[in-house]
Length: 543
Image 1 (spheres, helix red, strand yellow):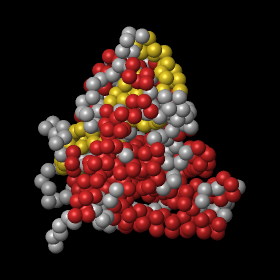
Image 2: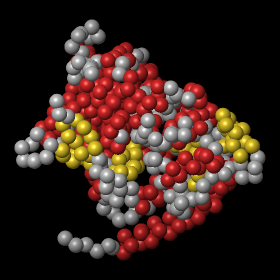
Image 3: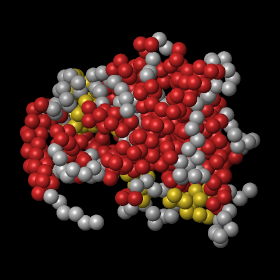
Image 4: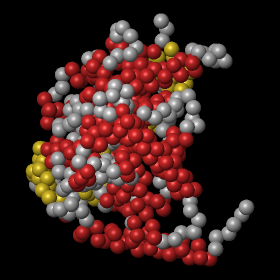
C-alpha cells in the first residue's frame, strides 16, 4: 500500500524544522551565559572534531591515543566540546573525581538522562534521586552482600558451563571439517549474561543459550535494539524536549510501538514474578531452607521487614527488574567480550591464565576459590581497567561550586589553577577510561594490556577512590555501582570456564572498534551498523 504525505504533515515538518533552527540559535546564544561555567573558557582543551558532535565520539573510543595525548598536554582536567559545541569539563583528576562522586545531591545526573531512564525502565535505582535513592539502595544492599553472592555463585557457574557445552557441541559438529570455528563471541556471551541475570537476579529461566523464543528475552532484546537506534530527529529532541510536542506526522513510529509492546511484556511478567515471590515468602517464612536465593527474592524478603515508610512499593520493585536486566546483562556481556578479545590478541597472557585455571581440580569452584586465583584476579582487573564497559559518567552542577584538584593545571593564560569554579548548570564528564589509563598514575604502558601490573602497583594508584581494585570502572560514593561484586563474579565464572576449555584467536585482517550503545560494545570496524560483534576463532583444547 502506498501513501502520500498530507499538507498537514508537510506543514508540521516545516514547523518542526523552523523550531529546530530557532531553538539551536537561542540555545547557542544563551548557553554561554546561563549554562556553561565561565571558567571553562579559560581552560585549555582540544579543538572540536565536529561542529555537531564536538569531541563526543573521540572521548568514547578505546585504545584512545588522542585522549592520552590530551591528558599529557592539558593535564587531568580540561575543556572539551560536547554535542552542539557546548563546552564541558572532562575530569580524570583523582581529587576532583572523588569530590564530585561523594556529593551526588550537588552533582546529580543530567535531567535528560534521568527522564530517559525513567521512561524506559521506571523509577529504579538508576533513575532514583535523593531520599528515594537512599531508600532503594538500603533495601537492595542485602541482595548484593557477600553472603548473597555466595548463594548465587553456583547459579552463575552453571550458566557458564551451559555456554561451554553449547560451544563444544558446535565445534564437534560432524558437518564441519575444521576443529576451529569462527564464532560471534559477543552474541553468545550476551545470551549467557542474560541467562545469568535471569536465574541469579530473579529466579527466571530465560534459556537464551538454547531457545531464542522466550517472550521476556525477546522483549528485552527488542527494547535494547530500539534504544540503540539514534536518529537525527531523536538526537535533537533529546536536547530540546520542547520539540517533542510538535506533531511530525500522526502515525506512531515502528520503534515507539515496539518499545511499548516490549515494556508491556516486561511489566506483565515482572508483576507476576513479584506477586508469586511475595506469596512464597509469606507462605514459607524466614526460617524455611527452600526460600529463593536469587536477588529479587532476597530483596522482597528484606523489604517485607522494613517499616511501611521505608518499604518499596510494587512499582519500585518492578523497576528493579528492568534495572537488573539492563545493568547486569549489558556490563557483563561487554566486559567478558572485551576480555576474550584481549586474550585473543595476547597468547602469552591467555596461556598463563589457562595454566592457572587448569590447575584447579574441578570445573565448579566456589566464589572463595575463584577469588583465590591470583592471575585470574589480575586479568579481570586489567580488563575492567583498560576496557571498561562504560567510558564515563555525566553529571551537572546543581549550584555554583569550587572543585579542588589534586594536580594543578595551567589555563589558557599560563596561570596555575588549583581549583575550578563551576557555575550552576555546568556540564561535567567523570571520565572512567581516562582515569584508568593515565600514564602518570598507571605507568608508561597504561594503554597496554598487562595483568602483571597488579602484582606491584605504582604508589599513585592509591590516590584513586574506588569500589574495586583501585579502578574508576564502578565509580564510587553513594551512587557507586551496587552490583560490582556480582559483575566481577560473573566475569570470573565465564573466563574460568571458557579459558579452561577453549583457545581463542582473531583473524588479523579484522579490526575491532568500540560502538557506544548504553555500553561500549566491541564491533567490527566498517560494520558498526550491525551493532555489537566479536568474531573470534575458537578451538577446543586438546587433552
